[in-house]
Length: 425
RNA sequence: GGAGAGAUGUCCGAGAGGUCGAAGGAGCUGGACUCGAAAUCCAGUGUAGUGCCUAGCAUUACCGAGGGUUCGAAUCCCUCUCUCUCCGCCA
Image 1 (tube, rainbow, N blue to C red):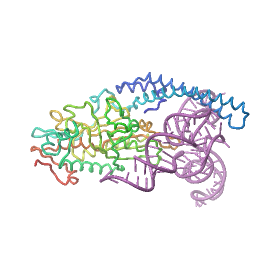
Image 2: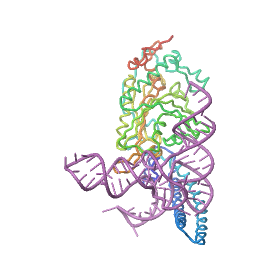
Image 3: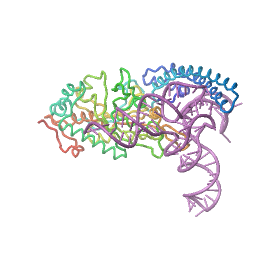
């Protein structure tokens, strides 16, 4: 969340921010509730001060009369205080909930616009492959090669579930390890994280576990959810902690399963592996000093590029428009890989996403460091996809398909796979 | 899942109804000593709010979390979470 004092000091800036992000947040109501809360808080504290004062008078010896008078006074204060505290708790609950809906500020350099069409393509790498034949999509290729099975996935688990089979399994494991090796080279500490996290952590990272639009599976009665990304478990890792300044930056990379409800996401563009309820992902995560977050954001993006360049997959980089930014993100870059089977003649499809969330998540999760001036400050937190396995598999299958429906393994993956081709049986 | 022990500041650790924002130590900061460093000595050092006559003062909250008892709770009671030990179960 943002610093709630900003509601007073940066009101118009927040208002503009909400507008540019095309979000629906009633800032006026929030500011009013904040005022109600402050005045109620002041009243409550004045009563507490009186209570303490009365109690303090009773520390020493007193004659019984004076003592019982003070006790009566204390009782009266206690009753009044009880009422005030209840009122305060209610308005505070409402206000806190509202305040969490205020998005992070966006970078002055981020393109302003309403939706993904306004995203700015800032770089193109590689030429989309030209096939001498009609390119197939990964669903057809995968099923023909018997490496993907959507039908039995649907039968056993429901729509948007799948089995990976045969050399497809090896390909996915090879990708995991390939990406891991590159990330480790850049000094990240590897993790395999839990696939379940508490709701408060989800909320702190900026996910809403509740509501019809939530993309999160909650585990009923447990206060926990299936994670949609290891960003949650890596970002929660230091929650409530004070990090030694000399330990920053902390660079972590985590492999987890990712679960997403994807309610309503169907159709041509989310077909097959592209949009599924469960996939594996290797995520990068950095905790750093505020002044360093911009450059680490670029570093994460560069690692993502290195990974896809190594695979020989054409891509473009997109600078995400304000209206398409997640609430915690200050700035976000996506890599969109060329997917020859997407749409009629191939299209770019998102394979990675990296966000600089500045101090927005750190404030909710209370993750700080002690600065040289002795003050505790919030760290900056960044995340980025190293490898979303399902989407990367789409890109590889479709880009490396041959006329007979076989798939060539990218050179960089051959040592990890132990074979050079996936062919029909 | 059952039984027991525990959770205190940046860290370790005392505390057992008013004298506790909390002993002591470590760390950190400043100073003395030193050519310099170490050691030693002296002093300072929690966080987050709020108000004001804003290098300060006052006040509120915070001793795992949430409730309760009480005029008054780190301290008593209840619930929960986590950690440790033992038992059960188990990949």
